[in-house]
Image (cartoon, one colour):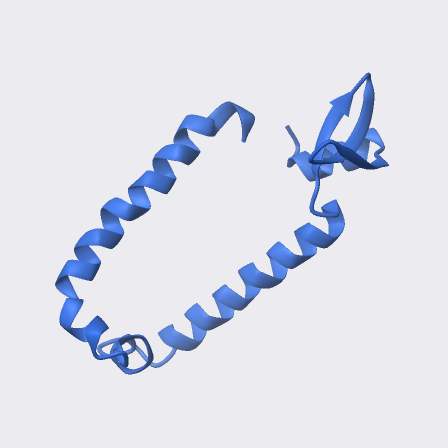
Length: 106
């Protein structure tokens, strides 16, 4: 992520560019409070909504496993040693392989 920070910021801004028109178009449905439960699946194949739910569950599990594996800390190098840093507190030392695995193979 260090090398593509600008693209990540653009992605976060871009989601609002897409979200605002969706809210404007679906405003009346959103106000009915049943939009996300009943109106979302309208016009979709029967397999689409369970697939979206399963994908959301997969991402949630993946995120929790990442937090467990990294101790909710950031891998970095301090004084030539690979460590997990949690806001200035060193959680533990890492091997080089663990460091690169948590960094995503930089």
